[in-house]
Length: 177
Ligand SMILES: [Ca+2]
Image 1 (cartoon, helix red, strand yellow):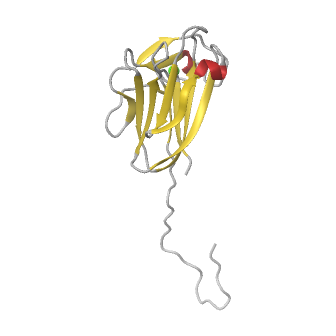
Image 2 (spheres, protein in one colour):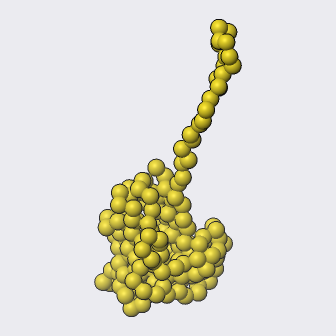
Image 3 (cartoon, rainbow, N blue to C red):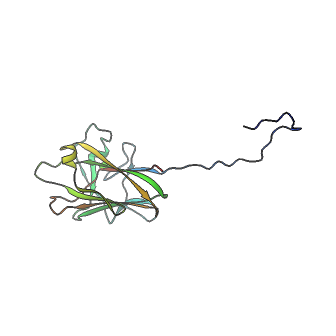
């Protein structure tokens, strides 16, 4: 606010104002499926954009559930027969919260056990969604990470003892600082 001083001959004036727009990056991906639950459809990675790296994204329908992401949990992405799945996001530098969604419909005899890396840092060792959430239950894991090189990579690597390759149902990447 600008107020005229009692001693001023003229009223207050101003020539221009610049307001820096603060933008924060947020993107949710329905891995292995179309646009549902407020998340974008999955896609292959292209330079400067985001998506699943190294080939086709496999998907498989599983039973839905009543969680926050019932439709996103109904499909998952994996790369068969690869022992590794990777998503890459081109983002502004800053601090990020990464949420990974899992819904494992395997029985108690088969396993999907993986190490999870974000920008080459191990954030989860020997992760087994069924052990965390139970069979056919949607659950999430969240991590924070700093991005300095405009790239945010998420990698899931199969553990040698795992029956099946790594999988993931959805990803949400959100700038928090
Ligand atoms: Ca999905």
